[in-house]
Image (cartoon, rainbow, N blue to C red; front, side, top):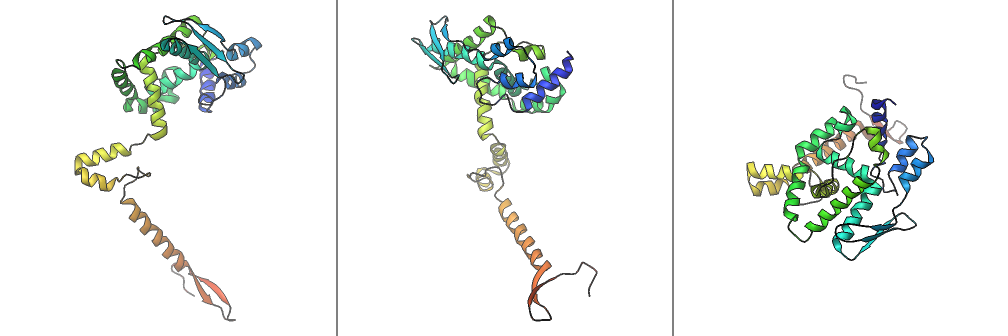
Length: 271
């Protein structure tokens, strides 16, 4: 198999939106694109893990319902999050690793130069640094131990089960999952939902012009990405276009007395 061709094909499948889809298993769409695969490969990609998940924190029961949704029960909260991490890796390990690579700016390391622009953007934004800072704040809170247990569960799956076939196609293995990686997924969600450069522009304006001027230029509103001075400029532009349209097309009376429209002659021509 031509490795580079396979990488390009897999990248095309990824960019097609399959990875982010909320399906039972994102591997399904890959199997369709890379068919034919054996029946064993299909079953391996879609099998569930009903049963007991052991952990250093105690056992947890993992059950998939008829719709493929995992349900976890445990006496210890850390055991529950360990099993949740285990199930997450079983269902979406490649998706998790891909999203982590996107946010860290490391996609091009496995798919080539097609992802360089994206990687440069994410490295400059330093989402990874923000995730590390968040984990430093969370580590010693009540949330810290369960986040760490979730990461342990992900890594337990990687250590004890076969990797999804995408890793074989791209010829690499995922790095261990860390608590900071979970914080990085929170950064991805935040950026996807509300990310913009409006806050950065407002901060830069405040630094140069003062808070009062920045507040005038960037008032609190839904359309926070545009300068307030853009509105009168746009309004003037719309009025100008209407006036031009009125000059090009004006009502007049025709020789027979009926109403009609007289259009302006082209520049330089007058009848």
